[in-house]
Length: 125
Image (cartoon, rainbow, N blue to C red; front, side, top):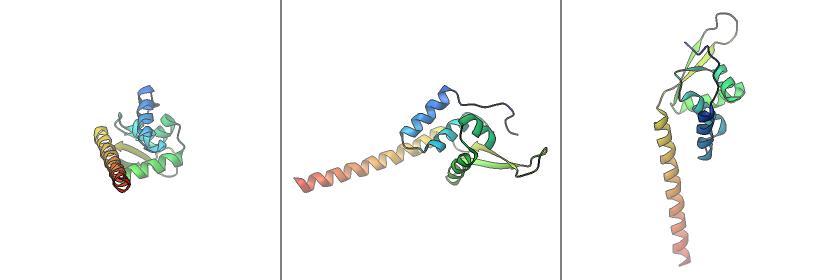
């Protein structure tokens, strides 16, 4: 089932991608998440068109998101042309769950930094 319509990121999508990047989500992953979080399913080509990413970048982003269990991937045999099957992707977890994962990571990292600062202060005092 994939999307036959031309998909493009709107202002909200770019804002989501920008905010994700501001918390150190890699650009290609941020754009891919922003592209997928509000749709049922998109082909690799749809993601390329919507985000302006190149095919290899989409593949790298999708592999990373797939390995984390955040996206599902399915192949669909092409009927009109030869070649590899078309890849379709959909979000497997809620966007809010992804944000909570990043929040936990940031909180843990900040806690570790605060502990280091405390250790430094104890050594100086």
